[in-house]
Image (cartoon, rainbow, N blue to C red; front, side, top):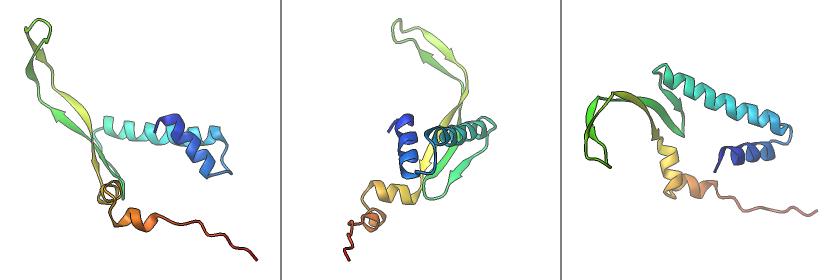
Amino acid sequence: MTKSELIAALAEANPHLRPLDAEMIVNTIFDEITAALSRGDRVELRGFGAFSAKRRDARTGRNPRTGESVAVAGKAVPYFKPGKELRERVNGGPLQRASRRVPVSVEG
């Protein structure tokens, strides 16, 4: 799913929101997660997972074209650890089966 597909799905699921409002909501969430990670904070979304920044030490790498040794500086990289609920849903666990609902039509 792309960001634009997420925005469209959010707008469709919430008819009271204009598409521009849905886009602003998604952008705000992403901006806040990015800002928190750049400050070194951890972002935890219960039932979904946790975002954090992991530190990678400086190392000596190799240029794949020439084979020459290259110094690679230390850096922080974003890391995502899925939560238990997300893992179970992805793997078809009990949460996914429980959330499948058959549409029921009521005639009267």
